[in-house]
Image 1: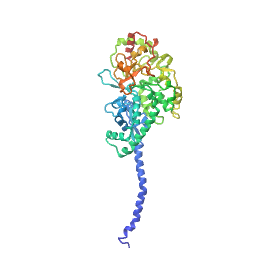
Image 2: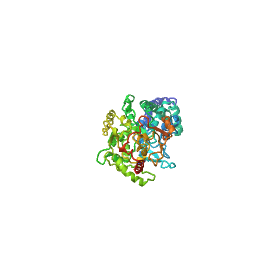
Image 3: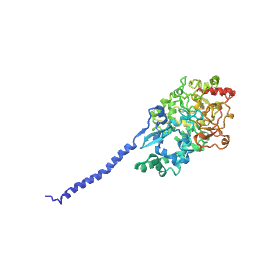
Image 4: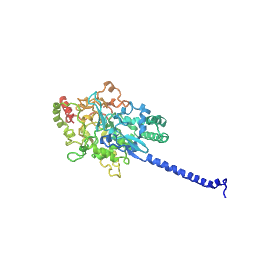
Amino acid sequence: MNTPESAPRTHRPRLAHTLLRLLVLLPWLLILLGGSYALVRFLPDEPVTYPDPVEHFKYGSTGGERESGFPYWIWQALPTVCAQHLPGPGYPSLGFIFEDGRDLPVGVSKRRHLGIDRVFLNCAACHTGLVRDTPDAPPRLIVGMPAHRFDIRAFQRFFFECAAGPSFSREFIVPEIERLSGGLGLIDRYLVYPVAIALMRERLLMLRGRFGFVFDQPPWGPGRVDTFNAAKVLFNFPVAQLPARERLGASDFPSIWNQRKRMLRDDGERMELHWDGNNPHTEERNKSAAFGTGTTPPTIDLAAIARVEAWVLDLTPPAWPLPIDSTLAARGAPLYAHYCADCHGTSGSDFGGPQVGHVTPITHIATDPARLDSYTRDLALNQATLYAGYPHRFRHFRKSRGYANMPLDGIWLRAPYLHNGSVPTLRDLLDPSPTRPRCFVRGNTLIDATRVGFASAADPAQCAASTDAEDKAADRFLFDTTLPGNGNGGHEGPAYGTELPAADKDALVEYLKTF
């Protein structure tokens, strides 16, 4: 018979056994809980979506956040942490557009990926602008026009220089994130964001090294980008060892209206796309452009891009918003038909014409050759490997010998003119190159109601000084046409109307307001 004193000894082996089992199972339980948390936290891949196609264009993802996205809170913190590397207060000084009530600018999308919200550029960053009809009018946002205020090189410089400085560290960035977000949890404060900061800094410094050649070029200024030299970096070209004529190709962002009409000419032929007409297929052109938004073949969001493609097929530009002198425009109509229609279309909505969408040889058009020279046969051959194994493999990139003749829909919103944006107004384009402005301001939102373009007059004293104005905000950039790649010659002579009397040139410009 057991005594009370001996009873505890009988249960001690069971208790010890139970404790031992718990000790054995506890690590597995913790692993299970940690794994479940990791799955819930880090597995979702969810872009912020918008039912409205315009909002989707402005803020919807193309997939670039997966590979190139910046953590949302780091994006928000850097303008304060690295303010010295911006030309003015915050992202607006780079030409970004902020709408009321939005925490991100037009052209920046958000996606939940790898456990945090990540952001990066989308199509609207390069194809949305602001316009003022009069000096006192508020700016209007217009989708589809070139983003003539967005300075993408200054954008790159900001992140590269910030990453290279001492402020790009957890000691500076995490406290600013705490202030902006209202507080972080322990895992975010001590693990997620310190790791994200370290990885982002490492990647930015790697890109800074690979894209260093860009900062040896003359400043691009707002509304311009060197598209295909960036593509050479992606293919690991030794860019610094390439011939000098191939390392410079900054050109203007294009408009993206009326894509359905650009897919096929009236005679059934495809228009030759990009400034140099290097690809006649809009599908490949669009996927190529998506690389500029950080996508790669495995990460591109084809469904999201397809929504944009379908929407821009029939997107049209807005009409000229100011009064038009109908008598003067009527006088300009036959002049346009004689000098312009064969290459640029019957009107702003009728793209008929034997040379519309075809390449004019550089020996004839004689505009600055830098953009043409930068796109090489070697690059075209490398682009043919993109999407290898996919149904949408690139097959149609090729080297051309000139610049493509563009339709002129919404031409009043597409200043400055020529492929490299070297002529500020249409009226200036009708003058011989020696009398075109040598130096002018890019990035203004005010319409030049007489000469058609944007207000661009520059102080001669400023033009006489250095125009390396990368430290200037987007609407105060001085564009110097004497610098390499910025030449404003060409598109002149009897065939282009530059020898017409001044009154005829004025009439032709008035007619172009109807486009």
